[in-house]
Image 1: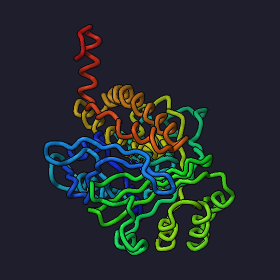
Image 2: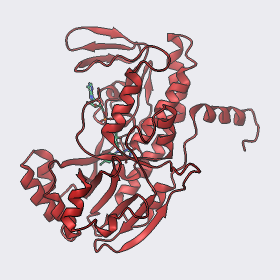
Image 3: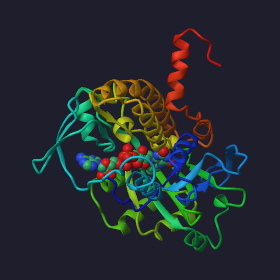
Image 4: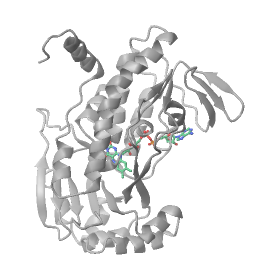
Length: 377
Ligand SMILES: Cc1cc2nc3c(=O)[nH]c(=O)nc-3n(C[C@H](O)[C@H](O)[C@H](O)COP(=O)(O)OP(=O)(O)OC[C@H]3O[C@@H](n4cnc5c(N)ncnc54)[C@H](O)[C@@H]3O)c2cc1C
């Protein structure tokens, strides 16, 4: 199901933008902004490091900042539209699944009805119910990683208004950068800021330890917006004053505990598979979770093109799993490392140095060449 999410952007990197473009979605359609790189600062707003991504001959980079609702809307248009081959997908909202038989592809619903599917794709997020039917119950559940992040977006004019002018560290004069402010103290407090939606909005992700009593209380209950703001001002003491003033100009701030999971032993069982956060819950500090989900979509499309019959699906899923899972598991571990200590240097370099993805069929072709004993260039 695709629900409306009111806030927060995400960074698509070369692996994600390659798949998005392959689906016929342009940066313009999703009102994305071209990312130029990153800049890091300490809490006194002194620049500590910077890194740039490569520009393509067409003036684009493979690094986009998008509002996640714009991306969701575009993906939904692709699957429900009448363009392209085959019947449009029918999206059924508000159906409650009570039981899944992963090997048989049977879904049972709360109203007593059931369907027998060729393929079940469990894309039901970090608290996935489908995952419970695919992996052994002994596998560790997703768990807290030590940070709580507050996410919000503000219109650019509010940002200028709060400071009299655009804050220096956020200037867009030299391109659109991810700005990382790290306190560099034991608590790992940090902020990640970048523009989105054709430079109309600035997106903030502000991380604090999830162990402070104030933060724990917020995560357990929904207090008033005002009390949340007051708590945040105290939690981010020492950060630039214009950011603390900005908190009280926001209308919606959502606290999220950062949760990840040990890599799974499999993403597939019978004719059922897991993708996205259901498969590889990871911290957002490599900005890769959605990008990985997009790679999974590319791989699935490629693999299923060879599905000759319903019976062939389980074996094709096993091939997909053998390529996707080892790759996503490494990204999962890297993301955990990056979050453990948000610094003004290391994590950002690694983040931009992320390798471009290789399409599924190309990976399979390379493997088969290797198996045949030939040298792969
Ligand atoms: C602060 C933050 C910043 C991030 N930044 C980035 C970034 O820059 N780049 C990036 O690639 N990723 C980023 N991510 C990660 C990204 O947001 C997630 O990976 C992505 O949203 C996961 O998508 P998903 O579809 O797998 O799961 P979700 O978005 O959680 O969607 C799951 C869907 O399943 C539905 N659902 C759940 N249970 C059921 C059920 N029983 N029956 C029916 N429907 C159900 C839910 O309603 C929901 O619509 C960030 C995450 C956070 C928290």
